[in-house]
Image (cartoon, rainbow, N blue to C red; front, side, top):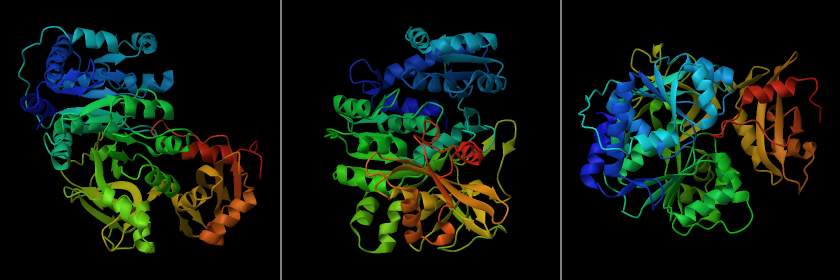
Length: 499
């Protein structure tokens, strides 16, 4: 139950198939294993206790992932966009690390006492004659440590052991199920759980995995065409930019497009479904602590919801689908009791792929092994899971709990709105008042009173924003997560003009 087992199976099943990189010059399964074996020897010889990856995604990342696994140390991908102070704080947790980094990060790593190679140097060094080493098959050993984005608190290092990741793969993917020509396009950075999940699931399926290092809509469409991409994964903000761009957005070979990482506005997915009527869309919901996906809205669910006149079926397009078979889910009230269909509560899960473990802090589960995701949501009568946002994001206005995501979705349905964020701001009378920041198109130009009326007509007056302001863009992480603390802080600022 070690990640190296997945790579060994790939070599046994399709040794000469290109599994990483472009169709010309990519790594075959055999070459990936050989490079990982050499990389493992380099790691062991260095005495490193971890491998820090501090660069954009690319072929060096899967080589580092499997080399670290073979060497018996965790891979620690860090956000290369962080400032020096934040990076130094995270590096201090891994004092005996070997780093693979972008050239511009080498000086910082040197000042931090961390030995580093560039990604190019790392790949070149691992292309020598393969080292012979039989790794320990330790399923309990740490495989990766991924730091949370810290949108509501300081980043925490989520520790995923080998058996968590392997359990996720075995429960999600059929071995060697991809055709030789299949290719997957990944557009997420290496410090996101989806990057790790895409590497190991596509390898196990036998599907070539390509990375777009820096996303733009035009580059994404062009690469998808050039590499005859059949499968792709994006975050919602990426899909919104793709469907918004002008010109030809056709990708003739594309069969499946998965999305996740943040809430998907209904207006965006509806437009994408109409843009690519022959593509199967998959909404994948999961967390770093759960080794990625725990619920899926399948392609047939998307199409049925889009075509249905039944409001209950139509609403499924805003859900994350049904929980995967390997996961047990409970929706719990504030007293910790399980509630039935239609009742909103805290989403709690358990299963072999659920780590819920933080480096240096142990596991965060109850006495039955359930992990509280801190997401709130409900399950309908047919088993579809609807996410209501983070518990910490809930607005309490006059004693009423209000989910910002519900209001944001309504705002996004207005034809003038490109993006929206709703937060609670302290108020002497109501406890919190509802305020919103929106990004609007140049045409048509919607006045804020029109937008408030749009929300009031769809919901009710108590959920209508007390104030709406227009910004050029909203603060988001590269994976599309809204930085609500920044939104709330700016809205509370006396320098922010009222509208």
